Amino acid sequence: MKDHFNFSGKVAAVTGGRRGLGRAMAVELARRGAKTAILSKSDEADDVLREIRRFGGEAAYFQVDLARREERTGLMDKVCRHFGRLDILVNNAGYLHCAPVLEYPLAQWDNDMAVLLDAVFELSQQAGRIMVEQGGGGKIIQIGSTAAFKEGAGLIAYATAKSALVGLTRCLAGGLAKHGINVNAIAPGVFNTDINKAFFNNPEAVARLSQPIPSGRFGEVEDIIGPMLFLASGMSGHVHGQTLVVDGGFTGV
Image (cartoon, rainbow, N blue to C red; front, side, top):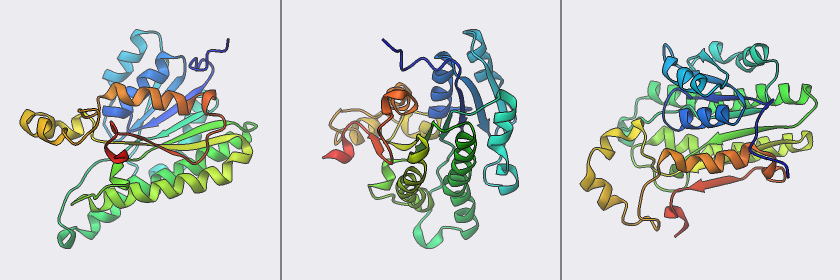
Protein backbone atom coordinates (compact mmCIF):
# COMPACT_ATOMS: atom_id res chain seq x y z
CA MET A 1 0.00 0.00 0.00
CA LYS A 2 1.30 3.45 -0.91
CA ASP A 3 2.41 5.65 1.96
CA HIS A 4 0.74 8.92 1.04
CA PHE A 5 2.49 10.72 3.88
CA ASN A 6 6.01 9.90 2.73
CA PHE A 7 7.27 13.09 1.09
CA SER A 8 10.72 11.82 0.12
CA GLY A 9 11.79 13.40 -3.14
CA LYS A 10 9.46 16.36 -2.63
CA VAL A 11 10.42 19.97 -1.97
CA ALA A 12 8.23 22.12 0.27
CA ALA A 13 8.32 25.85 1.00
CA VAL A 14 6.66 27.25 4.13
CA THR A 15 6.33 30.98 4.69
CA GLY A 16 6.33 32.10 8.30
CA GLY A 17 8.10 28.82 9.04
CA ARG A 18 10.26 30.22 11.81
CA ARG A 19 7.67 29.84 14.59
CA GLY A 20 4.13 28.85 15.52
CA LEU A 21 1.99 26.87 13.09
CA GLY A 22 4.44 27.48 10.25
CA ARG A 23 7.28 25.93 12.20
CA ALA A 24 5.18 22.91 13.15
CA MET A 25 4.22 22.32 9.53
CA ALA A 26 7.75 22.84 8.20
CA VAL A 27 9.23 20.44 10.74
CA GLU A 28 6.60 17.78 10.03
CA LEU A 29 7.11 17.97 6.27
CA ALA A 30 10.86 17.62 6.79
CA ARG A 31 10.32 14.75 9.23
CA ARG A 32 8.39 12.95 6.52
CA GLY A 33 11.15 13.34 3.97
CA ALA A 34 10.52 16.63 2.18
CA LYS A 35 13.41 18.99 1.57
CA THR A 36 12.03 22.08 3.23
CA ALA A 37 12.54 25.78 2.59
CA ILE A 38 11.69 27.96 5.57
CA LEU A 39 10.87 31.57 4.71
CA SER A 40 10.60 34.29 7.33
CA LYS A 41 11.45 37.88 8.15
CA SER A 42 13.55 36.82 11.16
CA ASP A 43 17.30 37.41 11.07
CA GLU A 44 17.95 33.68 11.44
CA ALA A 45 16.22 30.35 11.96
CA ASP A 46 19.05 28.34 13.49
CA ASP A 47 16.85 26.69 16.12
CA VAL A 48 14.35 25.23 13.66
CA LEU A 49 17.11 24.21 11.27
CA ARG A 50 18.89 22.38 14.10
CA GLU A 51 15.65 20.64 15.03
CA ILE A 52 15.18 19.39 11.49
CA ARG A 53 18.80 18.32 11.06
CA ARG A 54 18.75 16.40 14.35
CA PHE A 55 16.44 13.82 12.80
CA GLY A 56 18.32 13.83 9.48
CA GLY A 57 16.03 16.19 7.61
CA GLU A 58 17.16 18.68 5.00
CA ALA A 59 16.17 22.33 5.23
CA ALA A 60 17.31 25.78 4.18
CA TYR A 61 16.40 29.25 5.41
CA PHE A 62 15.42 32.17 3.18
CA GLN A 63 15.10 35.53 4.90
CA VAL A 64 12.45 37.72 3.28
CA ASP A 65 10.17 40.60 4.17
CA LEU A 66 6.97 39.62 2.38
CA ALA A 67 5.61 43.14 2.73
CA ARG A 68 8.18 44.27 0.15
CA ARG A 69 7.37 43.34 -3.44
CA GLU A 70 11.01 43.55 -4.50
CA GLU A 71 11.85 40.84 -1.97
CA ARG A 72 8.97 38.63 -3.12
CA THR A 73 10.01 38.82 -6.76
CA GLY A 74 11.56 35.54 -7.90
CA LEU A 75 11.37 34.06 -4.40
CA MET A 76 10.05 30.65 -5.47
CA ASP A 77 12.69 30.53 -8.21
CA LYS A 78 15.34 30.92 -5.50
CA VAL A 79 13.87 27.96 -3.62
CA CYS A 80 13.73 25.96 -6.85
CA ARG A 81 17.34 26.75 -7.71
CA HIS A 82 18.46 25.68 -4.24
CA PHE A 83 16.62 22.35 -4.15
CA GLY A 84 16.10 21.66 -7.84
CA ARG A 85 12.29 21.71 -7.85
CA LEU A 86 9.17 22.77 -5.94
CA ASP A 87 6.22 20.54 -5.06
CA ILE A 88 4.46 22.08 -2.06
CA LEU A 89 3.91 25.69 -1.03
CA VAL A 90 2.35 26.58 2.31
CA ASN A 91 1.44 30.27 2.50
CA ASN A 92 1.35 30.69 6.26
CA ALA A 93 3.08 34.01 7.05
CA GLY A 94 0.98 36.55 8.88
CA TYR A 95 0.48 38.59 12.02
CA LEU A 96 -2.23 40.41 13.92
CA HIS A 97 -2.74 44.14 14.26
CA CYS A 98 -5.75 45.34 16.21
CA ALA A 99 -7.18 48.87 16.19
CA PRO A 100 -10.64 50.49 16.15
CA VAL A 101 -12.22 50.86 12.72
CA LEU A 102 -12.05 54.66 12.68
CA GLU A 103 -8.46 54.71 13.90
CA TYR A 104 -6.91 51.94 11.80
CA PRO A 105 -3.82 53.53 10.15
CA LEU A 106 -3.81 53.41 6.36
CA ALA A 107 -0.10 52.64 6.31
CA GLN A 108 -0.76 49.66 8.57
CA TRP A 109 -3.57 48.54 6.27
CA ASP A 110 -1.25 48.65 3.25
CA ASN A 111 1.44 46.66 5.04
CA ASP A 112 -1.04 44.09 6.37
CA MET A 113 -2.65 43.49 3.00
CA ALA A 114 0.77 43.16 1.36
CA VAL A 115 1.73 40.31 3.68
CA LEU A 116 -1.65 38.64 4.17
CA LEU A 117 -3.00 38.79 0.62
CA ASP A 118 -0.66 40.25 -2.01
CA ALA A 119 2.21 37.94 -1.08
CA VAL A 120 -0.08 34.92 -1.06
CA PHE A 121 -1.23 35.59 -4.61
CA GLU A 122 2.23 36.41 -5.89
CA LEU A 123 3.95 33.38 -4.37
CA SER A 124 1.10 31.11 -5.48
CA GLN A 125 1.47 32.43 -9.01
CA GLN A 126 5.23 31.90 -8.91
CA ALA A 127 4.85 28.38 -7.54
CA GLY A 128 2.13 27.52 -10.06
CA ARG A 129 4.36 28.51 -12.97
CA ILE A 130 7.20 26.36 -11.65
CA MET A 131 4.89 23.38 -11.08
CA VAL A 132 3.50 23.67 -14.63
CA GLU A 133 7.03 23.85 -16.05
CA GLN A 134 7.90 20.70 -14.10
CA GLY A 135 5.13 18.87 -15.93
CA GLY A 136 2.19 19.58 -13.66
CA GLY A 137 1.18 18.42 -10.24
CA GLY A 138 1.78 20.14 -6.94
CA LYS A 139 0.10 21.42 -3.82
CA ILE A 140 -0.55 25.00 -2.73
CA ILE A 141 -2.00 25.43 0.76
CA GLN A 142 -3.15 28.78 2.09
CA ILE A 143 -3.44 29.29 5.84
CA GLY A 144 -6.53 31.38 6.43
CA SER A 145 -8.50 31.96 9.61
CA THR A 146 -11.97 31.63 11.08
CA ALA A 147 -11.84 35.44 11.13
CA ALA A 148 -13.03 35.03 7.53
CA PHE A 149 -16.35 33.70 8.85
CA LYS A 150 -16.77 35.33 12.26
CA GLU A 151 -16.65 38.99 13.21
CA GLY A 152 -13.05 40.20 13.25
CA ALA A 153 -13.50 42.99 15.83
CA GLY A 154 -10.47 45.29 15.56
CA LEU A 155 -8.59 42.92 13.26
CA ILE A 156 -9.77 44.96 10.27
CA ALA A 157 -7.11 44.12 7.68
CA TYR A 158 -6.54 40.61 9.00
CA ALA A 159 -10.19 39.57 8.82
CA THR A 160 -10.62 41.27 5.44
CA ALA A 161 -7.57 39.56 3.96
CA LYS A 162 -8.56 36.16 5.33
CA SER A 163 -12.04 36.59 3.86
CA ALA A 164 -10.52 37.43 0.48
CA LEU A 165 -8.23 34.42 0.81
CA VAL A 166 -11.22 32.08 0.61
CA GLY A 167 -12.15 33.56 -2.77
CA LEU A 168 -8.55 33.66 -3.95
CA THR A 169 -8.19 29.96 -3.13
CA ARG A 170 -11.19 29.14 -5.32
CA CYS A 171 -9.89 31.29 -8.18
CA LEU A 172 -6.41 29.79 -8.08
CA ALA A 173 -7.83 26.28 -7.89
CA GLY A 174 -10.06 26.94 -10.88
CA GLY A 175 -7.10 28.01 -12.97
CA LEU A 176 -4.59 25.37 -11.86
CA ALA A 177 -6.66 22.20 -11.46
CA LYS A 178 -6.22 21.33 -15.14
CA HIS A 179 -2.48 21.15 -14.47
CA GLY A 180 -2.96 18.68 -11.62
CA ILE A 181 -2.19 21.37 -9.04
CA ASN A 182 -4.37 21.37 -5.94
CA VAL A 183 -5.01 24.73 -4.26
CA ASN A 184 -6.83 24.60 -0.94
CA ALA A 185 -6.89 26.46 2.35
CA ILE A 186 -6.99 25.73 6.06
CA ALA A 187 -8.84 28.13 8.36
CA PRO A 188 -7.62 27.63 11.93
CA GLY A 189 -9.47 29.01 14.91
CA VAL A 190 -7.56 30.36 17.91
CA PHE A 191 -4.41 28.31 18.44
CA ASN A 192 -1.96 28.19 21.31
CA THR A 193 1.03 29.79 19.60
CA ASP A 194 3.34 32.65 20.46
CA ILE A 195 1.20 35.10 18.49
CA ASN A 196 -1.51 34.48 21.13
CA LYS A 197 0.87 34.17 24.08
CA ALA A 198 -0.70 36.96 26.15
CA PHE A 199 -4.15 35.39 25.85
CA PHE A 200 -3.00 31.88 26.81
CA ASN A 201 -1.15 33.29 29.80
CA ASN A 202 -4.59 34.17 31.23
CA PRO A 203 -6.14 30.82 32.28
CA GLU A 204 -9.40 32.42 33.38
CA ALA A 205 -9.93 34.01 29.96
CA VAL A 206 -9.01 30.77 28.21
CA ALA A 207 -11.48 28.78 30.31
CA ARG A 208 -14.29 31.31 29.81
CA LEU A 209 -13.86 31.84 26.08
CA SER A 210 -13.38 28.16 25.25
CA GLN A 211 -16.84 27.29 26.62
CA PRO A 212 -18.73 28.03 23.36
CA ILE A 213 -16.39 25.72 21.42
CA PRO A 214 -17.99 22.27 20.99
CA SER A 215 -14.66 20.50 21.55
CA GLY A 216 -14.22 22.50 24.77
CA ARG A 217 -10.77 23.80 23.93
CA PHE A 218 -8.67 25.99 21.67
CA GLY A 219 -6.26 24.54 19.14
CA GLU A 220 -2.76 23.24 19.78
CA VAL A 221 -0.08 23.27 17.09
CA GLU A 222 -0.43 19.50 16.65
CA ASP A 223 -4.01 20.03 15.46
CA ILE A 224 -2.83 21.68 12.23
CA ILE A 225 -0.62 18.75 11.20
CA GLY A 226 -3.27 16.28 10.05
CA PRO A 227 -5.19 18.72 7.83
CA MET A 228 -1.92 20.02 6.36
CA LEU A 229 -0.62 16.53 5.58
CA PHE A 230 -3.91 15.60 3.94
CA LEU A 231 -3.87 18.64 1.65
CA ALA A 232 -0.13 18.24 0.90
CA SER A 233 -0.46 14.56 0.02
CA GLY A 234 -1.89 12.53 -2.84
CA MET A 235 -4.90 11.72 -0.68
CA SER A 236 -6.38 15.12 -1.58
CA GLY A 237 -5.89 14.68 -5.32
CA HIS A 238 -9.55 15.37 -6.12
CA VAL A 239 -9.93 18.27 -3.67
CA HIS A 240 -9.74 21.73 -5.25
CA GLY A 241 -10.65 25.20 -3.99
CA GLN A 242 -11.81 24.15 -0.54
CA THR A 243 -11.28 25.81 2.84
CA LEU A 244 -10.98 23.29 5.67
CA VAL A 245 -11.97 24.86 8.99
CA VAL A 246 -10.01 23.60 12.01
CA ASP A 247 -11.58 25.24 15.06
CA GLY A 248 -13.05 22.56 17.31
CA GLY A 249 -16.48 23.11 15.77
CA PHE A 250 -16.83 26.78 16.73
CA THR A 251 -17.98 28.04 13.32
CA GLY A 252 -19.99 24.91 12.64
CA VAL A 253 -22.66 25.54 15.26
